[in-house]
Amino acid sequence: MGKRLGMPVQKIEKNDFLLRCWEVFHLNGYYNTSMQNLAEATGLQKAGLYHHYPTKEDLMRRVMQYALDEFRAYVLAVADELDLPPEQRLEKLLRRHKKLATLHRRGCFFANIALETGREGQFNEVLKTAMTEWAATVGRILLERLPAEQAEREGLRLVMEYEGAVLFYKLTGEEQYLEDYVHRTVALFNRPAPMPA
Amino acid sequence: MGKRLGMPVQKIEKNDFLLRCWEVFHLNGYYNTSMQNLAEATGLQKAGLYHHYPTKEDLMRRVMQYALDEFRAYVLAVADELDLPPEQRLEKLLRRHKKLATLHRRGCFFANIALETGREGQFNEVLKTAMTEWAATVGRILLERLPAEQAEREGLRLVMEYEGAVLFYKLTGEEQYLEDYVHRTVALFNRPAPMPA
DNA sequence: TTTTTTACCTACCGAATGGTCGGTAAAAAT
DNA sequence: ATTTTTACCGACCATTCGGTAGGTAAAAAA
Image (tube, rainbow over all chains, first blue to last red; front, top):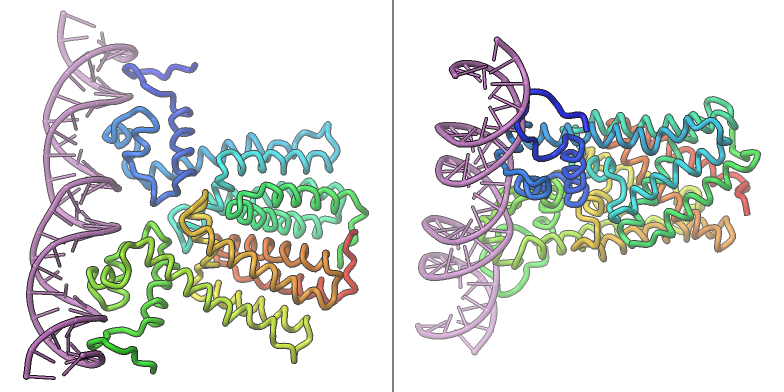
């Protein structure tokens, strides 16, 4: 697929490479992942990594961009499946995220890295983009059933609540926390919305 | 203050020691904190730390227990201030947690460590205790205004939403996320509770 | 007064860390 | 056919890592 030009035998496709790095970072966190770990996971040698990326931080930044792209394509894109009614779109979107979170029982990649690096951290820009975009996307779905201002607020609130649910899931291993979240969110949305002004 | 017996000149009080370690762990995370960092923060030498705690993991475990004790005494204890009406107790409790979260802009210590170490992590037991105890405490306050089952569910949900708000706060630095959370939570609680069955 | 116990230090260990250097081989460009 | 560009590797580097060994000094116990 898509051979790039001017290269001798490439051992691994770029997207495959980024995926494997993402898996390792997601599993171990940023600081607890070594370049050696990444080399083993991708089949390259450590120096091979440095040929493509000058530092670990740069590599991570690239991985985060990749994760954001995948997140958009796999989760957020559901919001544009306009053949479905908004309630079903919301549920489908939430279930996709749930599948990601439970994949290796690692929860939300962005939240993990955000809380690990945090305080004006090196990756805050991408992380901020991911989270706000997510909240905005949920808000956009809600817009079809709720007044504009309320939809936006509620989209943000739902994402917050979801991240909390993931935290409890990660701690306990109980998928029920996520399942309950999806249920009560969908239920909330299937009603005429008895929210306070 | 409480001199312990059978000791030569102690350089630092035990609680002061644990507090300083907690600060460092809270600021840098677990993996990104070295024993050297902790030594510098406490005024001891590295080997001095190992005299008191056999491994970094053991030390962290002790710090987490300390954090849990402080959390109980400073935040959760508010739930027992029965001279206040439950609404005010809830708000006071939330504001205390907010003060902790904004202290060094580091958010919730327990959530940070949970998401960093996670997957059947070394500290999950204490973390689970902290989080569920917190949710239960909020639920106990709500019990005075809501039916039992609903109070428990809502206590958990409020904690989840709070952790999500902290995540956004950490990413953006916007304290407003936390302030909004407190406002809408207290507002929600000051009404006759229009929750779905 | 001697012995024990404790708190802590200096100096060190092997392993792992992020990162560099100088190659090699193959495809592509000339 | 030659040169350039690229992907990658083995070996290495200084530093830091978690952790240990052996000692010193002082308070407490005997």
